[in-house]
Image (cartoon, rainbow, N blue to C red; front, side):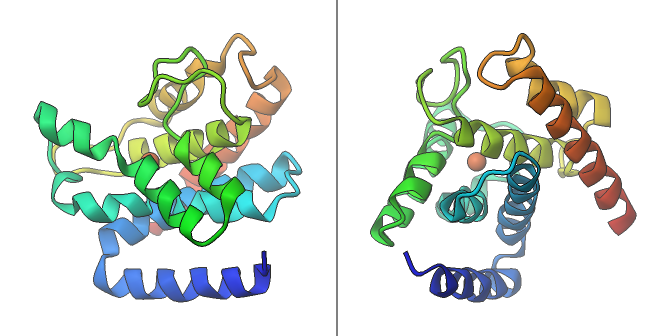
Length: 189
Ligand SMILES: [Fe+2]
């Protein structure tokens, strides 16, 4: 992988989204930012993990009209659950195979109750899920106010509470990053 090329590609792509698809830009950018903060703190030395965080939700581009809806019908929900697979395919087409794998599983849960029902997948996908879930929770939507910090932490971190997949020390570190991110986001409004 030519990381300098990929980084420039990502920057240009995000700049273009910022203008033309600002809602999706925000989701992708913030999930990427938060994932990379988690990665840095846990000393993940993997450039594909960094790219994966930013591209995880690119598949939402296909479902723009659903993302602000309060209630999705069964058909719509089934479609939106495809976004990890679509994002993963995009990364595979760029030969970013590890990033593609991390992204594919980014809505799975350690007990197998996630989108596709896997319980054996890379922990990097959990970090991206935590970032994506937390960011979604603290974002105001047309149909509800943002979740409180406590509610958002619970939603993001409770699946790992008994040390499932992520050890307690790392959970504490991640929690601190989420709290800092929450406070930073509050200052932006
Ligand atoms: Fe996602």
